[in-house]
Image 1 (cartoon, rainbow, N blue to C red):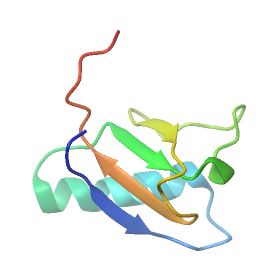
Image 2 (image 1 turned 120 degrees about the horizontal axis):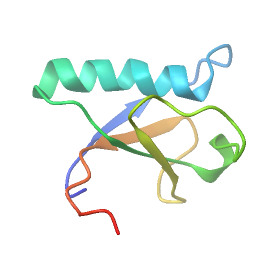
Image 3 (image 1 turned 90 degrees about the vertical axis):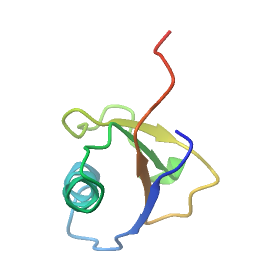
Length: 78
């Protein structure tokens, strides 16, 4: 992912997959394509937790808590 959209959501009542899907809907409306990759702070991801449909979530310490960095993964999967 070379560029992305930074999204802030600190709603404590909403789970992470719902936040990601909400941000992805906005991304799709704004940019005309759906994101498939989302970086979040490691403290926000639970390894056994649910995932957002069609969007890969990866931990990154470069992303602050309560922020999502969404975009399109332009690198081939290995």
